[in-house]
Image (tube, rainbow, N blue to C red; front, side, top):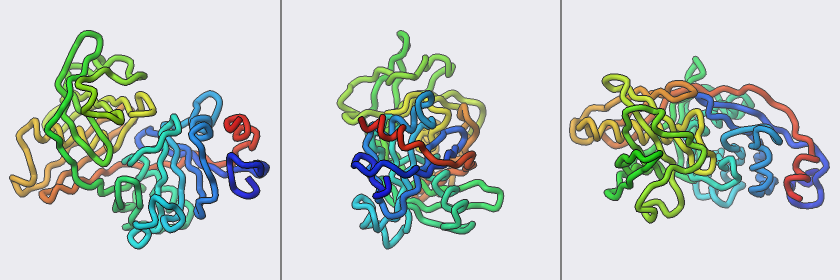
Length: 299
């Protein structure tokens, strides 16, 4: 890696990393401003492995937008690109908790200051605000609500699931008890399969009170995670529509508190359709990766 490549022959110098989480949705953070690293899926999966690697629900590859072919068109709006990877090494469009942790890293590294900033993602440019208390608010864009939903089945129980797209696909099912979601390590069966040809994040939701829900989630490519930001947004939108509330119709914003196994997020949908998510971003460690770990993963 003296030449800053991963699957080439120069894997000799340590690779810097950090570890962070947003409501316990945790990430390996790999700073690489010039996009000099080629991170194959095998390496990402090894780094995210909780027993043989560092451990994480995903990996945040920190790159300047101008240096990455997937983000160059956004470079005029956002200096930094979140090249997000799922724990299995697959590429994902967006990760809401990841955006908050990404912003927290940029501030910690002295690359941005407290206040407003823009972050490029494969789901578009996301606007963030870093508050004095460390919480980060992210503008998550608008939800798309396709008409075609699915039926999710676990252990003989079935529920209709609302199709919500937050730059990535979600199926939101309201249940009587979160335990009914089962183990969530594998993808909950759903039909018809063609509604989500590229896979889906599946949320199971229960009510806690007015404007207050709790959820569990199977994240595509990662299994059950302690939190999912885009999933919390999808759940809030689905809950509002179920409750007969549409800010585009009422002209007033609607806010839901969403409890996840790893903490709480506050989701607000505005009359213009924009959705904001507020929650913590925590950096817990930093260090270097032994090149031998990389070489083993590549081999």
